[in-house]
Length: 436
Image (cartoon, rainbow, N blue to C red; front, side, top):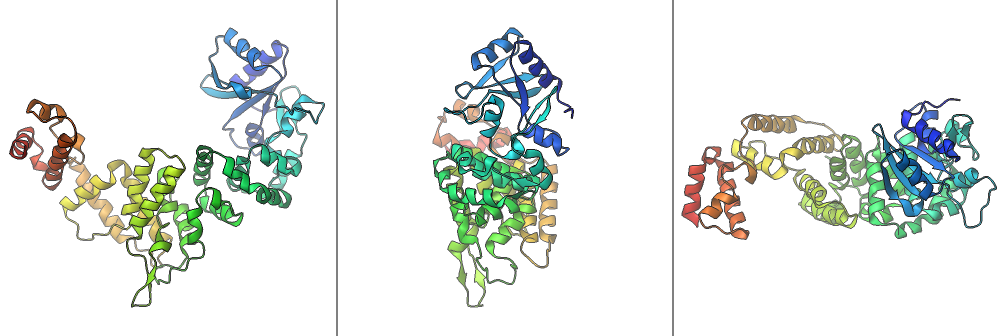
C-alpha cells in the first residue's frame, strides 16, 4: 500500500536513510490516510539521536526548530509543510526487542500507533487497522499505564471518539474512569488546549455529554455540573439548562470565542433561579452572574485577556432586547459588543432561541441585525480610535497622559456616540477646553 505523502516527508525519509538511519511516518497521518482523509500532521520517528538529527538537516541548510529537544523532538519546515521528527521513544527497561515496536507501544491509541515506510508499507503491531475498521478507540494494550504516562490522553480519547464518530472500547472506557483523577496533575494550559479542540468538533455537545458521563467535568469546568438535569420550570424552555447549553453549542459555527460563550452563557442560571408568583421559574440577572463565573473559569484555564473579554461581553449581552432601539442606542450597542464580535453576538442569540424556545421566532434578532448593518454603512465613530482627536492633541493643550486623559477621551466618545456630527477636531477641542 502506497501512502501519498508530501515531497518534504519523502525528502526527510531519504536523508535519514542516506545517513544510515531508520525513519518512519507515524501517528495521525497514517490514521487519516486509511480513513480517506487529508492528513493534518506529518510526524516522523527515527532511531537517530537528537544531535545527529540536527546535524543532518543543518548540513542541508534546512532550518531546525528545537521545539522539544529535551524530549528528543525537533520541527522542520519544508515547502510550507511542518514536520515533527522525534527519536524513538523507549522505556528504561525495554519490553520489545524491536525499537520501532517499543516506540509505538508507548503511544496513546491503537489507531495512532501505526507506522509507514515506502519500502515496507504500513506497520501495525497493535491492531490499529482492525480498530479503524471497527471504528473503535482503544488504549494500546488496554493498560492504564498508557494513560498514566500522559493523563491528557483521557480527554484526547473523548475528543477523538467524537471527531471520528468512534466508540471507546469497554475496557478502555473503564481505564479512563480509573485514571481520571490524574488529570489534576495536568497543567491548566494543556487542559485548555484540549478543551479548545473539543469545542471545535462538528458536534461539541457529544464530547461535553461524554465528559459529563465519565465525570471528567470535575477537572475542566466543574461549575457545569450544577446545570445537569436542572429543570428550568418555564414554558419558554423545553430543555434543562445543560441540554439547552449543548443545543446552543451545536447551533454555533466553529469559532472558539463563540463556542466558549455558548458553553458558559447560562452557567450562572442555577445560582439565580427562583419561582415567581406566577409559579414559573425565573433567572433574573443570570447573564451578569454567568459572565462573572465565566471570567473566573476562563482565567483559571489561562485564557488570554483578549479572549476572556470577548467571551465575557457576549455572555453579558446575550439577553439584550430593545425592539424600539434608536440609532443612538444601536451605536452604543455596537460600541459595547465591538464590531469584531457583532456577528458572534447574533449567532449566539439565534442559537439561544433555537436551543430553547418552542416558537423559534428570530424576527427581533433579524431586525436588530439589519439596524446594525444600516448604522455601520454610515461608518460612525464607535471607539476612541475613531475620534478625530488623539492623545497628542490633548498633550499640546496641557492634558497629562494617564487617567485624566483617558477620562476625557471616554467623555468625548460618549458625546460622539450620541451625535456623530460632533466628531470634528474643532468641535472636540472646544468640548475639551470647556471641561479642563
